[in-house]
Length: 80
Length: 268
Image 1 (cartoon, chains in turn orange, brown):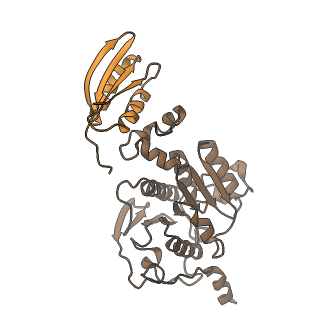
Image 2 (tube, helix red, strand yellow):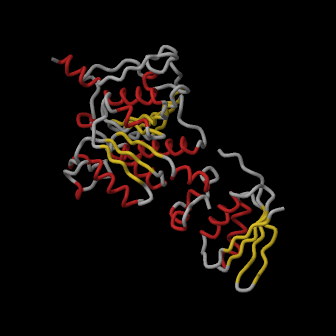
Image 3 (cartoon, chains in turn brown, cyan):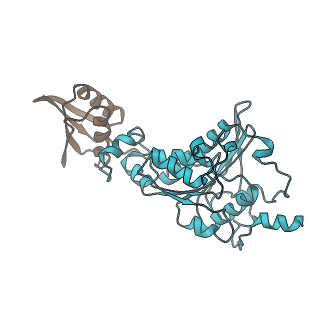
């Protein structure tokens, strides 16, 4: 399965989540992405929001000064 | 990501996270064009929300200049732009809100002679006019050009909105086949209008235009929304295409006419 990376170090909420969502929009269901954040609230906000939007959070791992969030794209929602 | 720069991601973030918009929808809005005919009470809020949403090209059609009696409802204009052409005043306000948007000012009155040319290069048309002659002309033009038309009118405390998808849903003439004789329908100058009513209905028009551009949700087609702000009630009436409609029936030959000039001739 193809793996993507998204470096959001230096970015703050809610744009961490907005950018994560945009990357997921470009992916196929089942694909995973490694998202790195260093804004402390993002470590809990981003996984919570992604789950709310139907994506699966496989892990939130402290890494260096920040965190690695591994997310898998959920099933495609039919528009409207 | 969808060709959006960092500032655009921030500016549109609250709608980017809507599943019906997303990056793909925002790209579509930025690449889209809407013609707002009338930069007055309805056109002001409609164009303002379209610009805020990042609709990339907005055409404004209006031949008038800003008058002090406009400012009670026409929020694109201000005391500082009194006497200026409405399309210039409007363009200035829209660009101040969102420099992403290209505003095309058309300082003309919509006429049979220029209507097709004005409408043809836009994706969606917002009817924000203040007179019946132009309302019928714009309907006929949009049917001819097959352009979705967000039709609305306001008077006193009341408003009416419907979305017309030519060839698929009822057009304005399906609903009102007979043009009322001149002088029988009062205008806002005579009957009055509460600014907030125009604001509400113009915002509904912007919402409809955006939905049509995105292909999201259900357009207000085949339905007439009637708004009564005085008693704050919203009522919906189902409407159907008229198989005998003079402009949108199968095989109809549409001839664009300037009704108002006909009226003047009749008066003489």
